[in-house]
Amino acid sequence: MNDLPAEADCSISRSWLEKDQASQEAMSNARDLINAHLYPVLATAGTIFLAIGMVNAIQVNQKMSAIEEEAKYFNHCIKAHIEENPKYLLDEIVVHCNGSYREPKTSLAQ
Image 1 (cartoon, helix red, strand yellow):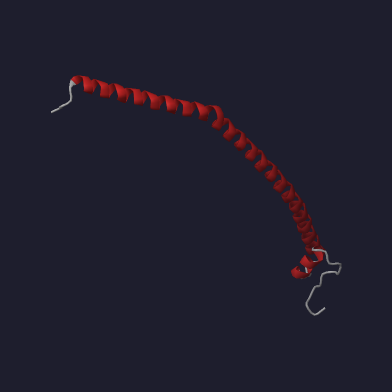
Image 2 (cartoon, helix red, strand yellow):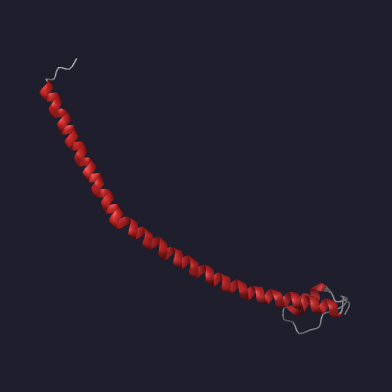
């Protein structure tokens, strides 16, 4: 079945083992390089991007709180005018609360 002598078979297996060990050492070196350099770089980049995202989230939150204050004032203005005179037209109240100085109308004929 096998025409090669036993010594040739043994030398083939030795050379294969040597190549296998060499490739394992190369992989080990590659893993060491990755562990020593790539992971810290990726961790640093991830931390920086997380910090940037948090700063952006805080800025958005501050902008939203300003909008929330405006909405609270607007709702208070609408409720106050409706309680003051329920006959006011809602469109006119909205215009007044948005900054118009004219008083809300009670009918379209005015």
